[in-house]
Image 1 (tube, rainbow over the protein chains, first blue to last red):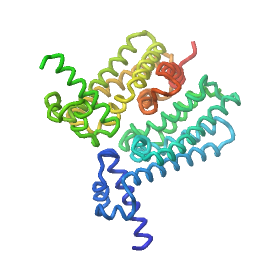
Image 2: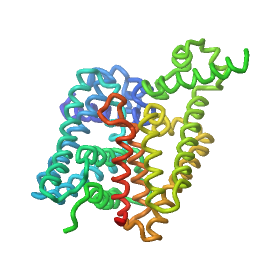
Image 3: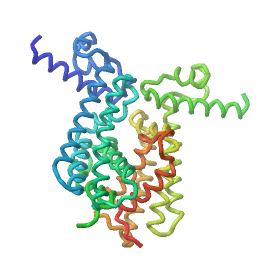
Image 4: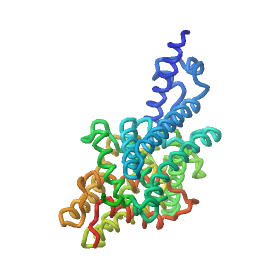
Length: 196
Length: 196
């Protein structure tokens, strides 16, 4: 089997796992469902992935690493709190709207991960939370934001972004950029940004 | 079987279904799992509930009716926009924090409902959304709120409240009332409430 074919089969199985987990949940999905959605035999799945949980871990790690990178890029894109918050919220919301199917699995199937995998993913989640918290706490320290509870406000900003994956619909009236633009306004209000 | 025992068995099955759906998802749960968690035989389950979907529908309808009632009570509790918004957000957040396990099933397993049941539940969800939207739109009309997009802001308020069920932990540092109090402050900021 050539390298290209091998990578293609692996990716097809990941895409099939995303669809299967999204429609029937992790526990309701069999490896046979995933293999069949990818047009492969159940035995062929095991050539590429050790188990159903291995596929979930791969989807989860990829999603969390991408989210962490987006948040870090948002932070690096500006040198003051308002610009940072807007960049982080925009990137986070657009990602969770565009990739709402995989983002639901990434955020709602954590309990199905093995203890070792969950520990790794929890570390990525803490890193994402810490970036958001730093943006809000720095803003308060620099006098740009006035929220009375920076930590809970940072958690609420993250929560609002994650929940976009639950309610966003491709066929809805708003596109990901519309949602992101209004969510930036809401985020500035939530932190109590001083009008400039 | 006496009426009391009958009601007790029905309720025990509902509680067992909540626990089973929460830990393994609707599709990953069998009627045998539910019966066994309730200390009953699979056959006994069918004396009280027609199917696993029937149990999900009951949990979903109960949760949505309770949420709608809480929101309506919040609206009725005050005669001006700020008081209404605070009452609605407080009731919604406390409910979703206290009952986070059942609230996750209520909000994340909609796709597993039968088409007829989904239609009924979707009607309840529209009624809840409409109450929130009226609170925000009335506030803007009366000059108490200044948000540029009342409909998306109302959706974001609902989204923030629903997602409490995902992240809230009984053993966490904040109790439901702590979260509700800060979320009322965030909600007033989100709608752009004019300081009084």
